[in-house]
Amino acid sequence: MYHLWADDLRAGGWCACGGCAGMTPSDQALEATNLVAEALERVDPAAQVAHLAYHDTLEAPQRVRPRANVAALWAPRNRCYAHALDDGGCRRNR
Image (cartoon, rainbow, N blue to C red):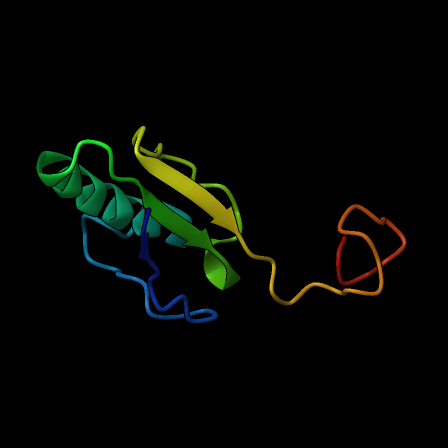
């Protein structure tokens, strides 16, 4: 398992060029992870790449799907730890 973690800056750092402008931060991050996973697969077919989702990439990608050798790691770092993630009564975790 290889860990490739982008600097997921809150509300920033994502590409706005013509090719990326219509992509969410989650799509952009997963696209980059997929490209690394594709290259790595040529060197080591058994290798996997961890894709960390946090800050701007917490929401599921809309257009990009992970390659078979990409594993998702969901890290809601700014959650409230006093309540369960699915506790509807907690304003922060809602």
